[in-house]
Length: 485
Image (cartoon, rainbow, N blue to C red; front, side, top):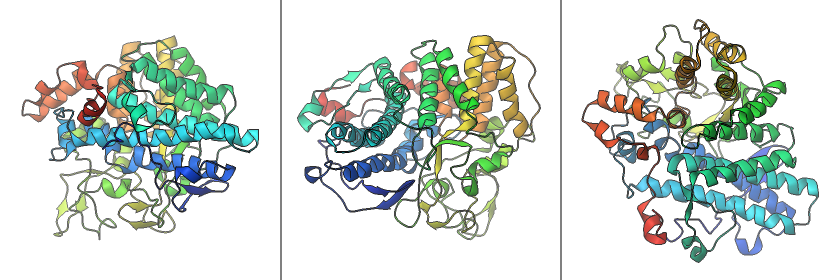
């Protein structure tokens, strides 16, 4: 457990690369004979991308700290999911340590790449690309950490175990400053190109993430008023002509549109080689008959009550409901279940024409980490704060609603628009790990989740009485080893 603060060994991480990110694994490397050549760095960068599979999708922590914390689900299980949804976790809850270790292990990979680049015999173009990719992935990982834990240690160089013990946590602002600086360096120094290559970061993905970071910095707890910076970046993506607002919501998640113009940045998966996506099976019920859904489901799923469905999609005729949720399914005893809906996003594509699947955790389905719709809706939020809710901000909101089969909203005031956007984002991005973080950044989490917990019964609202619960506690093992708390 001595490496709980920051992983020291790189382990089996490396992958080969051609024109796009290729996830066929190669042999394990050690640090003693690695990071020496251009080929080594290319492989190491691919290992950083590979880390995002675990950090943002496949690991159960990818939803435990986000969707399971929100009012979209009630995880009434004995797993850590149950503690998180009831706000009853404490520093010894196991998932806290595994999440912390996971993120810092992968940050270590990025830091090793950044440390090694100057000594590599390679072209300036390649060096800039490697730096840009490592900075982008590190920024994405720190964005996860700061939103989950708040104040965390900033580590930008590879550390020994002894050195890791001496690193104290930094303020939320300082962590956001690091994220901002990494992304701004990419943009200012043209470290990444505008070319869109499946599975790889580009200039637009860096701009989109930085725009989102400015939105978060403008909200709780920093309240930095960086709406104009966010709007400027997000508008450039909108005006680039590289991305598309699909007319059909279902097309966003269709395998044939993978890495299409609805995606600003996707995490690549490939089945049959141990690099598959577990998301579709993980969200299906464990009791599901494999004849109804290939390979059945999993106990590690999001549990969704019908009352939540009615709140996520409060307006009749919302086309997103049937794309997002399956409300009728066959269990292993042959009974049709209609009282236990489950998230079906990405889950309808089971054959060779729509996307092969080789096993329950082995789907050839890429995960859209930054959707173009998210860019547009965040841009509309920024415009509302800068100019008011009408004009282009309202047009974007209504684009989303019309695609969903809903009526347009009329002109309004800023606060009304904020609440409309909050609901629209809940409907649009349900089960994509956005809802909890949206509630925190808008400082609505305490009010919304107090009401939610009260409605579930059991007095769990007494577990969440202050904004301290906006962030998870530092893992006990980290405190024991380093003194950080």
